Amino acid sequence: MKIIRADVIITCPGRNFVTLKLVTDEGVYGIGDATLNGRELAVASYLRDHVCPLLVGRDPHRIEDTWQYLYKGAYWRRGPVTMSAIAAVDMALWDIKAKVAGLPLYQLLGGASRDGVMVYSHATGRDIPETLDRYAAYQEKGFKAIRVQCGVPGMASVYGVSKGGDSYEPATKGWPEEQSWSTEKYLNYVPKLFEAVREKFGFDTHLLHDVHHRLTPIEAARLGKAVEPYALFWLEDPTPAENQEGFRLIRQHTTTPIAVGEVFNSIWDCKQLIEEQLIDYIRATLTHAGGITHMRRIADLAALYQVRTGCHGPSDLSPVCMGAALHFDLWVPNFGVQEYMGYPDPALEVFPHAWSFADGFMHPGEAPGHGVDIDETLAARYPYDPAYLPVARLEDGTLTNW
Ligand SMILES: O=C(O)C(=O)C[C@H](O)[C@H](O)CO
Image (cartoon, rainbow, N blue to C red):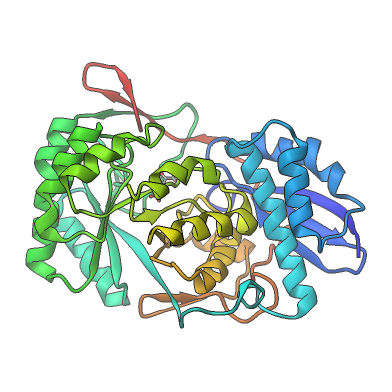
């Protein structure tokens, strides 16, 4: 069996997605997600100009060899662009292998370790009452785990909260939006949100929150300690993780579980955090961290230290990533939770999928492969539309972490 074509498809059904399609001489094809929010064309070019020509003629079954060939063969290792491109190839190859076997992908990984994949969604509001209403609506839909984010008095915009109060999409057209940030206002307010949730809804649903890299280690330690009574499932990205030793300080002060890793793209980014047990959940995911082949290595390392997975799953990773991630989640022994923000209808139409949701759990379905396809005719109706993630400044104008 040979790969005879490798195409990159860029489409914007509500937001931009980059998809790699590998076609074989036997007519079987596979697709992989290569979307890197705000830098989509860099990965598309990496694939089109440097990877696709190398794939034509290769045996699609040699997934490991192809992974090593693209990783070691480039000489220049790691980084989000390279690793997203490798991930797309890897996902497409696993899709092909499972289709040829006539099996859903999770069966090739080792079979199901659970009946369904617990997913969390985002309850966000401009203020606490609005967030509580959204929380109630997600509970009503059956979610067992809910992330909460809300507006902070005195701050014009806050990560995770849309200005109109509807679903949150951070990327904006034109130049990156400039947002302002005050750690003091945030730290003084956010514990009140958790208190209100626990007071109104009790402790039965898992409660999550994303700090989105905004605090220093000692500030994060203070927050983790202050919110211990609300028994969070996790506090995510409390401080930027380039400085992995910084997490020691957080750990010394609080038992609030910590989740990190959505901006990671290789096992090397996770190594110290996992080996020193500085985190409880690893958030790397298939598209940005080298596909199924590499995520399995990260999860296996994490399992040695009782760190569980909590794959990143925002609406800026395509439904292809979501489908493949659900197969991974159904199999991975040290599974924790999977993020699921959902997608606008046009995206779900461009990417027909086999997954399902019921009562807080998702299942990848039994279709051979990863169960997500692309309708190329429909995709062509939604041309690429440049958009950027925002940047954040402190109130005095200093650029800070968004
Ligand atoms: O889903 C999350 O936890 C995020 O933080 C989402 C990120 O802001 C988003 O993926 C950036 O493109």
